[in-house]
Image (cartoon, rainbow, N blue to C red; front, side, top):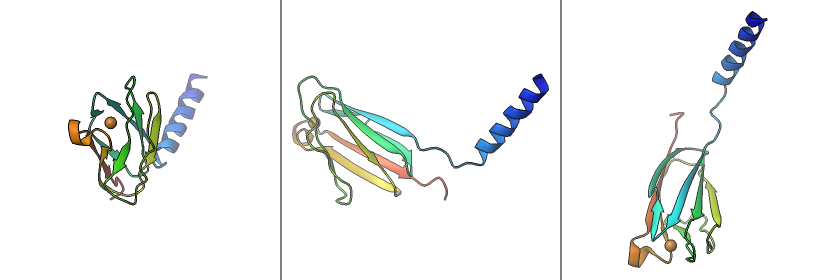
Amino acid sequence: MKQILGGCLFAVSALLAGQPAAADTVRVGMKNGKFAPAAVTINVGDRVIWLNDDEDTHHRVNFDDPSLENSEDLRPDKEYSVVFNKPGEFTYYCRYHKKDYGMEGKVVVVDKAR
Ligand SMILES: [Cu+2]
């Protein structure tokens, strides 16, 4: 029985090794005039979720790259999620807190396949 189980596990891990890596999700908090972490590095196809951790402040994710869609106003506990399908460095800022707090961030998207 042990031998059969071992053989099965080996077959499963061999299968998984041949598959493309599943997409990951990275979370970025928004609180006290900061994105945390302010810079994240992800792979093409991964998702970033921004979550407003503040108690009574709106935030808004605005990208400098116009091909990326900006968020609406995000109330406390609200999330905004973007899947990045191309490599590059994508800077963004909070529409309300960039000027006074320097609330800015960056998503670096790398293409593992290259
Ligand atoms: Cu903000």
